[in-house]
Length: 87
Image (tube, rainbow, N blue to C red; front, side, top):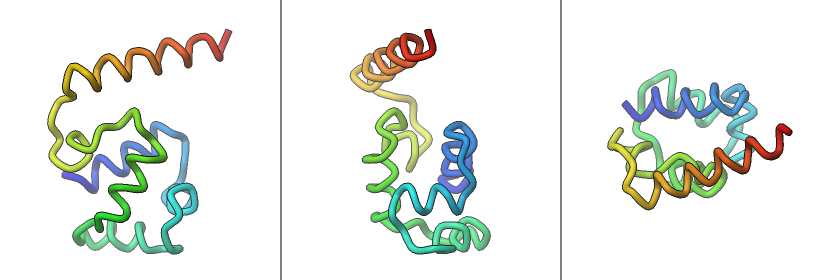
């Protein structure tokens, strides 16, 4: 479910939900309330997540679908670059 995938993004990025809200520029407690109530997630939140964290595809975020080959290649490059940053 999209709510679980948003929580997954926050966890993987090392962010609390309130910090994630600030990172993507949505109102305080708006995302946490949406997640808590399992309410529908606005297109603004989805778009903001996709722009801020491009390594998570919209198709995965919304539908839980696997990535396209193009997205897989992009994510592979990002992982390689992250490896260089750590060294």
